Structure formats: C-alpha cells, structure tokens
Image (cartoon, rainbow, N blue to C red; front, top):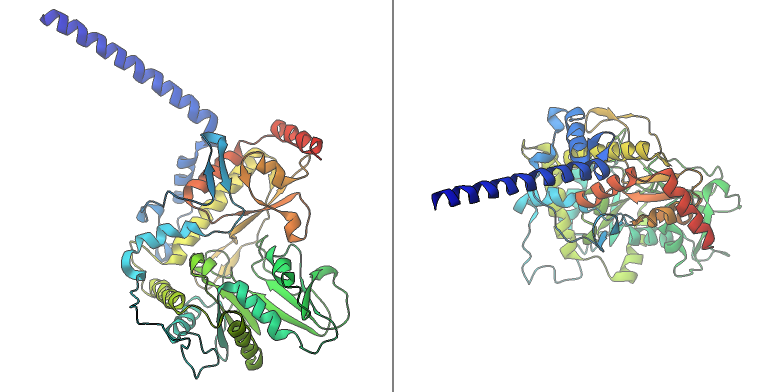
Length: 461
C-alpha cells in the first residue's frame, strides 16, 4: 500500500512539473509577441521611465504612492472579446486618469450639503455675477495665485456651466445687437473641433463661424479665439489675424503645469478656464472666466441668466472644495500624495515617453516636437506634454482615423479641426488600463498591415 502511494505521488509530481514547464514556455512566447515595446515589456518600460525621469524631491509623486485601483467601468473601452477585439475609445478628452489621485486623497475633498442649503437662486445678490458662490470665487483667486498662470487683479469672475457655456456667453457679450451682419468668429487651424459647432448651432444672427484665422481677410470687426496651449496640437498660440477691429478671447483650459510650463501669468482681456482639465472633474460642469471689462462681464452674466438662470450652487460648492484641496496640496505637500500637479505632471511625462517609443517602433506615425521651457511653478524646465496627441499617419495611409478604427482604436479625425484626414487627435487622459492597451497596440501596427487596410478603405469609397 505504501509503495502504491509512493508511485502515485511521483506520477502526480511529474505531471505537475510538465504542466508548469509548458505554461512557462507559452507565457514567454506570448509576452514576446504581444507585450514588448523596444525590447521591454510595457510594465518594465514604465518602471524604467519612472526611474529615469523621477521629478525633483519637492515635486515627486511616484505612481506606487498612489496605488488605489481605478474603477473598472469605462466609457472609453468596449470589450468584444480578447486582445485586439477590445475597442479603445480615445475620441473624447474624458479626464478619468485623475480618478486615482482623488481616490487616494480620501475624504479631503468630500463635502456635505444639507437639504436646506443652496435653495435660493441667488448666491450674492449684490455682486456683478449674482449666482457666483463667494467660496468658489475665493478658491479661484487662491489657485491662480499659487500656480501663477493668470492675472486676477482687477478682474471679474463669471462662472458658467463648463467653458462651453462661457464661450457662448462671450459671443453674446461681444456681438453688437444692432449690427448689419453677423460678427465673424475665427481661430487658427487646427482649431478646437467644437468651436464651429457651438458657434453655429443656433444659427444666430449675431455671430457666425468664419473658419481659419490664418486665411481670414474680411473687413470689419471679428472675434479671434486663441487656445493656448492649443487643442488639438498642444502648441503655445498667439493671435494671427493682423487686422484692426478684432477682439481676442483666450481659451486657457490647458494652461496648467501638468501640461505646459508656466512661463508667466497670462494677462488678457477675456480668459476661460475649466475644472474639467485642471482637476479632472469634467462631470461637475463648472468653468470660469476672468474678464477685465465690466460691461462685457455684465453681458456674459445676462446671457447665463437668460440661458440657465445661473449655475448650479451644489457644483460650485463642490468645485470650491476641490480647488481648496488642490491649492493646499501645492502649499503644504505631503510625502505620500504630493500635489495634484505633481501627480499629473509625472503621469503625463510617463505617458508621452511611452507613446513616442510606440510611434518609433511602429514607424507609421509622427508626433509634434516641443521645445523645453522653464516652469515657474515646478521650478524645472521641460517640454510640453499636452492633454491630446496630434498624431499624423505617414504615407501610404491617407485616412488616419479610418486606419486606426480598423485596429479598434477610436480617435477624432483632423477634418473636424480644419485640416486633412492624415491627422487625428488622441486623448492622453484616459484610465491607465485603456492607455496602456492603446500604446501596446499602436507599437505593433506595421507597414504590411497599413497597406492592406489602405486598400480596403479605397475599395469602400
């Protein structure tokens, strides 16, 4: 009996050993074929990037300090199966990469709003912007003072339901009511894809979209939109129309140190900001404008009054708490968390390095190159790391959006930004698992596959 038991155990051990060896061989083969960028697995390469590019001690926020898992639900990916059947949607700039930071902060940004609070239409009836919560205004001033990205002295704050409503309010405020024809609205291509849609959605007789500012030559007054850093290509922008009678509106949604060096405090007549891209809270639908001219600010307030009778107080109170946590994190950083900007700057640097490595390995794409600049906030010099990647497909690929879609990667075509289909805009702000899968997939797309897909696209036309 003992002999039988001994033989039986030996056979089991041999079978188990064989199974383990086969499993190990299959794993090595799989990782060799699908998980490698420039000779390193994505996880190893990410770890190497952390070691090589760790920020200075005063601004360091290693990813391992923020280990809270992300939510498993995501609007940016659809799982139809395994591997390349998984659709990755990077069309929208949904800033879910920030979830991990805010999960780690715990209850610091939590607020309790009693049922009786915020019931009135009015926040401060005696203020120019009567629906602006004083606590939110206070935190806006604090944050800009700490970061140093905008002048707030002698400015009026107008709060809006996201920067989209503020943009509409600006158009209303700047357009003469007695004009013979609509005021022309322009922006240099590639411009934000929603500008034409928002401008013309109501077919207003006050203003109309007039296209690329670089080719605009119509006489008379106009509005030029200057987005800096620019959405979609990430470059720092200045006005380009060399004519009199123009009014400039500066969209500074991305002028924060995780995306671009803060060279100086922006000092313009009308400046638009949003919590969506500064803190990642897109769902709050809160933005603000810093306006120099009192009459323009009054007209903007009037538009919002007519449009939505103010802006949600609950959202403003929550935004005030979030901005307070961000500012306090900058002034009193902890070794565990660091500030929001430390976290996001490190993550964006890491993501851009991974993307550039994937682009080099594939050989089918190109990305913009940015010169480094000195940042007064982070006290370092670095090249911009925009919230979007402006990817160009090289020949023979003609339609970059269609080509990437054939690989189950959804992006936004350059035609929506006033340029050709060889360009696409790709969000850099998605959750880690989606971004990592995108980078791996992009690195394995090669020329033979591109020629086959391009032929398919031509046949379908």
